[in-house]
Amino acid sequence: MKNIKLKYFYFIFTITVILSSCSPKIYFTPDLRTRLENNGVDLKNIQFYNDRQVLLKREISSGEAKVTQGKVIVENGKYINIVKLKPQTPGVCVKKSYNGVDISFEFGKDKSLSFGPNVTDGSKVKYYQLYANEWKDGLGKVSYDYKIYYIQSGGGQTKLMIKKSELNNLEIDKRTIKGRKL
View 1 (cartoon, helix red, strand yellow):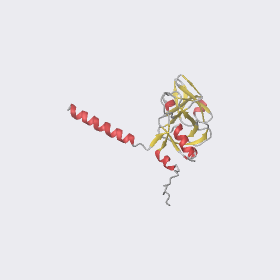
View 2: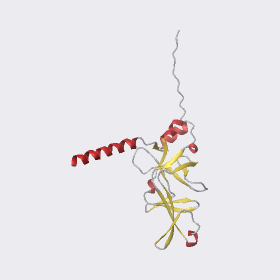
View 3: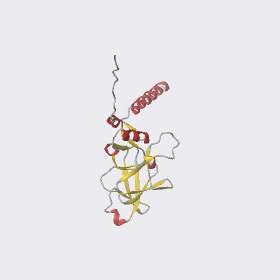
View 4: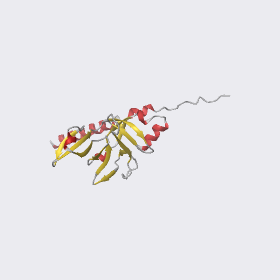
């Protein structure tokens, strides 16, 4: 019986590894950005995705609770407005800076989030990760829809992804040398 469970575990593990290695998306990195831009690909023409859930919270007045977009809950007697960004939500680049990008996941002015290379991660590969204006007690402060929200715990680790097929858009100058004869 134990041997069957072990074989079942290895089977499920193998299938999981195979399926995850065939992922149609890859993480957006500074090297990948440079490669795309050097090949004339405008970042505003690329479909971006977030890799995990992001919750933005802010406290609001009871009068504002009736007209606020998003989910409104009562927490400790206070009205809380929550904007939820689910994993794999498609977004577009609305602004580029030297090393960062602003990605909008919905229509409207000031409805974008900033991403840039992570600098605190000790790894060699730098991913484009969610930025905040400031961090305090694990919560990131951002401006969204002209209001101040706080990125909830774990959301600050959100990274950008693009489809692997976007790399097929790179124009490759390729030719074969036929040689010279006398």
